[in-house]
Image (cartoon, rainbow, N blue to C red; front, side, top):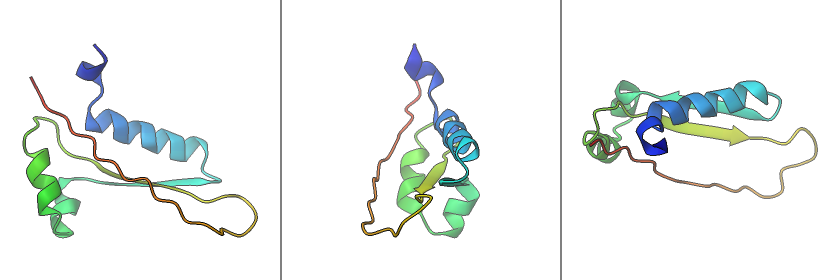
Length: 84
C-alpha cells in the first residue's frame, strides 16, 4: 500500500529532489526534530510524537527565472504519519 511507503522522510526526500532537479527556480530547507525544537515548534513536535517516524518540516520555495514577483502565494499543509 502506498501509505505504508509514504512517510515524512520520503516526502522530504522528494522535496529535496525537486529542488535539486530544478535548482534554477526551487530551493528546499528541511528541518529535523532538533532544529524544530530550537525554533520552539512545540505544537508541531507534539503531533509528530504520535509517529514512530521522525518529523521533517519542509519549506520548498519557488522563484521564477525572470520578471518581477508581483504576487506572493503560500500553500501550507501538514502531512501527518500515523503508524499502525
